[in-house]
Length: 174
View 1 (cartoon, rainbow, N blue to C red):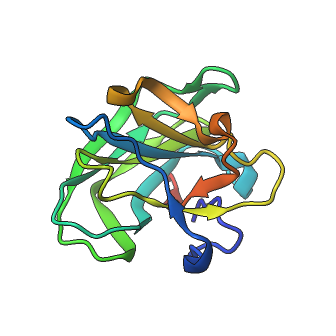
View 2: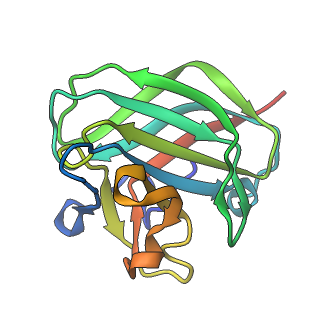
């Protein structure tokens, strides 16, 4: 499991927040975590099989998983190359949800970014966990075009020291 959480599989409820942006008319939000597979003692290629995420507010809402090729570099953020996009069936409950992809996605780069998209992000935010490790805020991104965030923006830009509670389950290729 690729995770930015202090304890993989545990998004501490007591410290959880969620970040969302609403322009009043549109609430499109995408919350993204980027993972460098080398940080987990592995190397490409690998298959992404499922995504774990924690919901702050459960609503009858459409959510979608979006998988990006990875990060372009430290300054430009998430790659514009989308490897996969699919709807997640609801209903959702507050807390942990796991979505198994319709078919595993092969990733051949060192990094992969996994996001959760909501057309009503102001009401269905992905929870965050306060992180106290160096580099915090550089691996989690928010994309909200209606609020001026046209490109994935590191949450550290807003002085938030959090990571999104999104994990990716992967297996080696071959």
